[in-house]
Image (cartoon, rainbow, N blue to C red):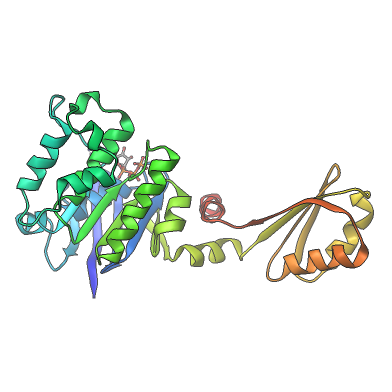
Length: 302
Ligand SMILES: Nc1ncnc2c1ncn2[C@@H]1O[C@H](COP(=O)(O)OP(=O)(O)OP(=O)(O)O)[C@@H](O)[C@H]1O
């Protein structure tokens, strides 16, 4: 059974439609990523699901409750980390955690959460004195302190350094292990590829595709792979031999470099050819299509 469903969701601001008839089914216990360009309607959609913003039309069910009508019940079940979360300037980290813990029947240990988010040493620091990344980590802690069954995380790791980002990913994987349903709005394709079970791609207030990361990559790039290497020999003199190989799509020469794209077993075909002919291929690199490639392809198709 899906944990979250939405049907015909709509929202306009001053007559401009920004969410334009969205249908969604998010399964219990999955990490569901919401992707799309700036202004595509991602935040408005997840805010309507969280009950932070009222919809103009459509139906939403979160764990069987309507976020507009059953806000009180859902507040105990849903943890929300929104973009630009603000707290009073003078509120200290530990005070914020204590305050949020008091809202819930069975909060997790605030100390553990602070430890896991590397905030223990900042626990007495007022909100206004935290760095951007520390504020972000506090917002994540506040979203998780109530042991939510659904966590809505909008731009989870924006502003975090690479190490903190990786650590936060570990925390989110832990939520999945606990059966929490996670909605993750992100502009980081690597993050979506790493964490998401499925994703929705938003464009101009609509969802254009829902798929697994691997499914979207295959759908949009045909599983394209690129092989690049430098030859001691003149690359132009052997271009046609590479073009004739199975699964090769394109062959390009840039100076001494050769760039070959293809699908299926193209890597095997190219490396076997190099070995067979005794060519000297230096600095050979393989680039598999990523979610970034897939989403950029999607953008160029719109
Ligand atoms: N309170 C508001 N009043 C008027 N317009 C708004 C309001 N909130 C959002 N919008 C507009 O609605 C559109 C969708 O915004 P939304 O924040 O949902 O997009 P997004 O996909 O989350 O974008 P981003 O990736 O930049 O966060 C944007 O054009 C935005 O300017």
